[in-house]
Length: 413
Ligand SMILES: C[S@@+](CC[C@H](N)C(=O)[O-])C[C@H]1O[C@@H](n2cnc3c(N)ncnc32)[C@H](O)[C@@H]1O
Image (cartoon, rainbow, N blue to C red):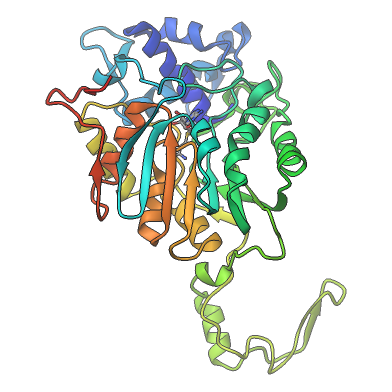
């Protein structure tokens, strides 16, 4: 189970029950986090502390603390071990009715629709990139619309199909998706990622360019049940960015748009005229020639296909604060702005159209806007569309179409 999934499972208990004592929380999330009674009974020493602790309940409290840091839950004053949701989240989320599409807001470069992504069946605008992070596959579907594991591949393929039809020749599709879905009750990973790669190839005719890795060193520990619990797994540190194109030869990805600074050592090597020795390694597969290799000064380093980005940063922290100030729920599964910005610059040219059918907190739109790309996004939950509007309110030509009334309640709900 991934971090976002575990956080959602813990949060769902507070959404269902309001105030919850920790013992009740442990019981409610036991199954969905993959714990057993034995996990709850077992005590172990942790680190240098000689006292024994329950690893499983500690893990759950760790998620509780993460939700507290996101301002989603709080302690109930005067009642030891009892926590509750903070303010606005008690309200239900508001999904778009079937067949309904409203403009949430627009900027000079883009439009955010409050709608199911089904609306793309009627849109024919050519696009250069589909960059999206679909809802995660869950063992038990959540109320904000996560399909169960057995249906996730079909759901993603059918959602992307009408947009892929609009992809310019050589355009790209990137699906950012978790690696941490487990076969129920076991530490074996679901093969949905493999099935998804094959389905996108076989059903939509897409060619796989790469399985880019989004690496996050400081990711929250997990899968709790299998890494901290049974110890059969390692803690996770990456997610997939599955990158496809409809035409590999004409693919207009260009790494010159995302070059990284050279290391100091490499810069000095180029300034000194490059390699001074002939070198050969890997049985001659890799050779360096004295006076030739690295003799030309180049503008930057070609990035490697492991992308290191953190979900934290000033922009998202500020946007989250603003969303909370409006009394709106925070989105719990956001990708890093830096990751979206990198992929957009790598895979599109200025003025190209970038599409995200699962808009969430609007990371794709924010990154496209910053990079001077046009964008189009759908999101089915109204409160998240308003969150996106708050996040992009400083963009040129911003126009909000879903007004908030003075009580910060959604006046259209
Ligand atoms: C993992 S989140 C996307 C997060 C986004 N990449 C970001 O960085 O903010 C998936 C989003 O898809 C939305 N969603 C689920 N089903 C949808 C559908 N059929 N049409 C449009 N949006 C949908 C969910 O409400 C959720 O906000």
